[in-house]
Length: 169
Image 1 (tube, rainbow, N blue to C red):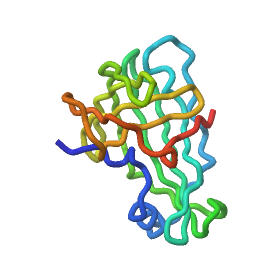
Image 2 (cartoon, one colour; image 1 turned 120 degrees about the horizontal axis):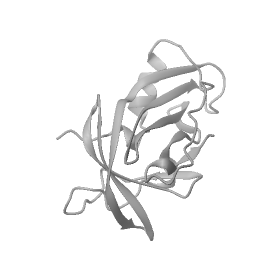
Image 3 (cartoon, rainbow, N blue to C red; image 1 turned 60 degrees about the horizontal axis):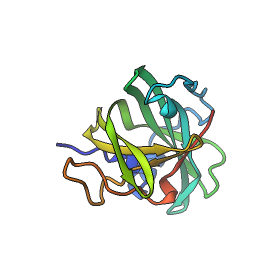
């Protein structure tokens, strides 16, 4: 089974690929509205962005837009914006192929790092996999798909804070 690599989100190859593609778009696209319902996925609905990161003289920012499709699932896309220079400013190059046509289905919860994380079975144009996510409402932590996994195949730890996303809206 292919693993969802893109929620690791940031790598030198991805930033380089984004900088080599045709310019287009900007990271000022409208945000996706949040969801105030009590549904299990509601806390993840909306727009999330990473802090600016630097790789090899360039910089980038990842954006995730999630829209609820049911009380237990959501869909969305993950996009990388690459910039020449180190401050995520100026014209950006938009790479829309990080995770496209993402579909996430809630599969339960598990304890990780002292919090109760949500387990998801995910699929996208780039592959399928199992992921854990946790949000406190303002930041979104993602399970490290390259780290150890439990008996069901879900990550046992979160990525380092560099890969934490912040709510945009």
